[in-house]
Image (cartoon, rainbow, N blue to C red; front, side, top):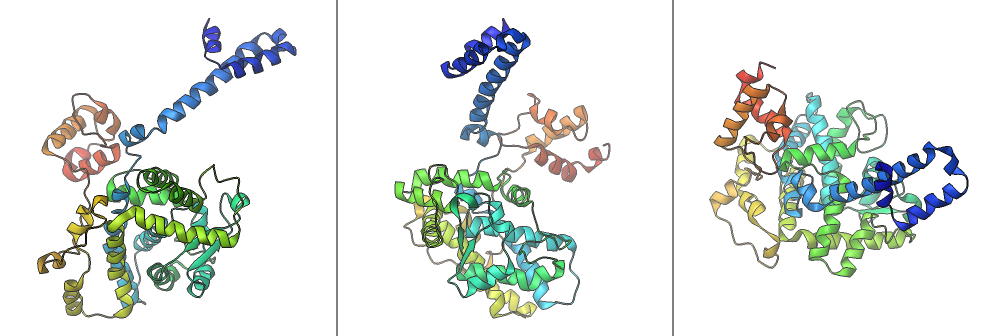
Length: 406
């Protein structure tokens, strides 16, 4: 009876295929009928599950979806720490640097490539070499990458680095990368000096630390495709799809080098339009932080304190500017706003006193480490988007005594 019910779920095409196999002699093999029906029905159910799991509402409920506005907060969130590392490497080239700081600098550059340079596939940046960056300096900022997942279809994945991008990557290559003692020519290397090959995990961690969302490169490309439908024309949507080497609609076309470069240039323009005025402000903020280091590499502490007054981007502007304000010209900032520009705070899902009580009660009832049961307990009203990882971090900092019972 179970097999009959599953058979009724199949489409006419699937039934005809099964009937053909049965007519060719498989009906006499007893269990073969049920096996084929089981597999076909499981495949159908699996497709339905995948469709449900990739629904945007489902992804949002799991914390696997973010807006462009949220993703634009990632680089500013991590920038102060990276800026400190670069300054230390420049001003004290012979002093040792913590291995964790070196790893963070590598992760920062990788995420910078994804979010600021191009929403591309991980392999494009995984196989990015120092020589390619050197060539880009005299080649209009272009890098024509030939090693990426869909290279057989597209031929080239062209990257376009602007002056600020080149400066940021060059600082990393000259001041941070040598400390990793690289054994290859790739820009991104591990602490052992070998090629970095886990860029998806890297991006997921950095984005989660900044905005509390699980976003990997493929999800980011999906977000860009979705946002482009809302904010770009049909022609611009096609350009973004081609630039990402992502859309199945354009996968039949083979792109030669020059066309790929044109697409990269137009794609960058479309991304700027998509990110709006906030994207421009984030880029200005990055330039004011990192590019200024090359103009004054050895500032004294007094000079560094005085330079704060020249910041071009304030915390409030980064947090409060939305896409609806694209045509609005930023007003002149007060001195106090300028002085507070270093205190960049990203809005995250903060714990309330009520949640702390829920967490404490959950620790006493379930014990340390049982974050999922605590989160799913209907007695505890945690907000939508709260994750097990955040419960662990909160418990470690808020209830260290209870955590010692682990």
